[in-house]
Length: 446
Image (cartoon, rainbow, N blue to C red; front, side):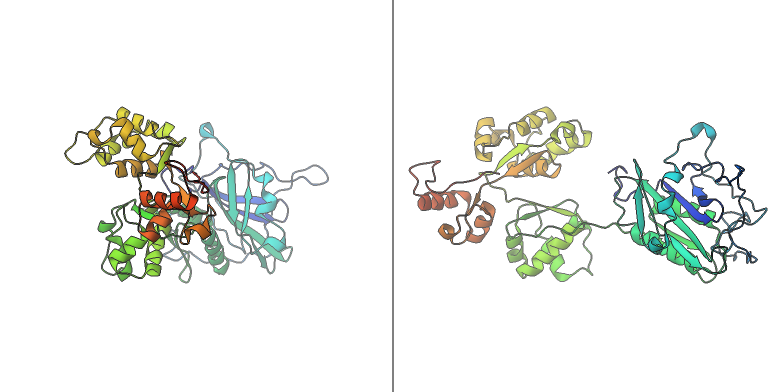
């Protein structure tokens, strides 16, 4: 994703916009400053003269002092904004550490292009609204307050800006909660200081705690949303992406504690359930839980009849320093000389469709090189530089289920048989005439 190594999208900007009765939608505060382009003047009247900004309310009630435990420690300015008091005459804008110099000016987009979605019609107020520009996405929760305002209502929105390709699912509850807390405030919060702390804390720590007054505070913590894992099959093999033994705690579920002991990249789901002496459905649930948090991945059962081929990612993996350092020690048997990276890369490049692992081993004398073939193929799948392909065949019932929808790994688990035995069954059912010929049975490689 655009954020590099982080799995949470980075906030590019935070801004606070309101609907002014003379100027229309306008940004009051933004952090960092001047990152979003705004018009220098408001709309003109019929005579062509510029309309000066005026208060949004007919009555401006006094602003209570900020509580000692509030945001005053971050900024001592008196410029405060609230749903009932936005433009006090003589107010001073807060000086921001994110003030941008004119020499470093770079705008994300023009506010006028999206203003109708930031301050939308009443039908969209109180709803999560997302809009996009060419390179960015803006998410907000517009609010409309009824009361003694010039138009009997007041609209505002606190918005977050992200890269266009960012996944915003984890920020949706954040935006809703910030809007809900601000709406509940009876005093005037220092909005600019809130924006600064949201921008800094959520980007740096993925959480924040902002005291607004003695009754209200904003407590936020971002939790990434993971996609639901795909359905598990009993013949799939879980492979740990982290050291699970170092993460196990005594208060874990008993089934999880048992299952983790047998996740080694070799045992399939059914075998793990047998070794752990656990119900197969509970074993699936435990492994699905680990798969959901992306600490394991599922691979095929390793068989010498499997076929592998290169993927496009091998082009950049070939140049990755950490891949070069990790591959040799991982795939080499203990006590054997570690082959250099060009030799290992050449062996990966020789994996092709139509050539089984067994045939590949014989051609390139893999046994004498001291390479653990199982670890060699799993390393290529995890990185990923190679893709596996093994023969789909018939499940239980064999002859009655010749539909090409069932995997040979499924048969291996169900019948507790390797490929050589399954191949004999196919020869027998298909009425073959010799090696490589299955008669009426067709084996599909994909």
